[in-house]
Length: 146
Image 1 (spheres, rainbow, N blue to C red):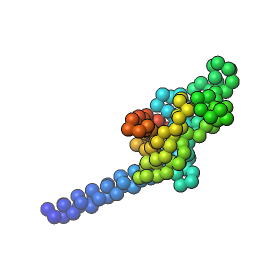
Image 2: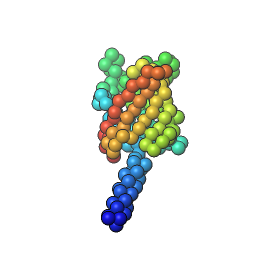
Image 3: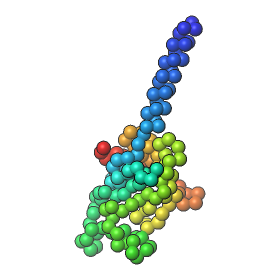
Image 4: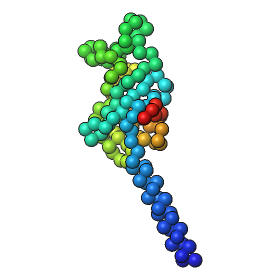
């Protein structure tokens, strides 16, 4: 009976170690499709944390002007002229725990920056959350390709 218990303990320890190891190896780097499917964001390692910028838009042209879409909702007139493709979304995203980074995220839909966290929740999914005071929301992005 005790041999059986030892075998089961070793087996459980081996599986537990493997699971933990894979979880800690999760990487946010890559291209991610937003939950609405209207943008792709490339995330890469930078400065000990992660950076992310828009690399694709479903509608890259401004329908009103016929020109490439710009950051028109930005309250800073100089920044409002930036092209949406290449627009940085994350700032100060530093690791806070395995598979999780916290910092700020820029929302081009309203021109505001919010406290945010990014968490790898699976090999193909990323949870992006933002908060204003006590109000929080988020969405799940899917890997667009490696």
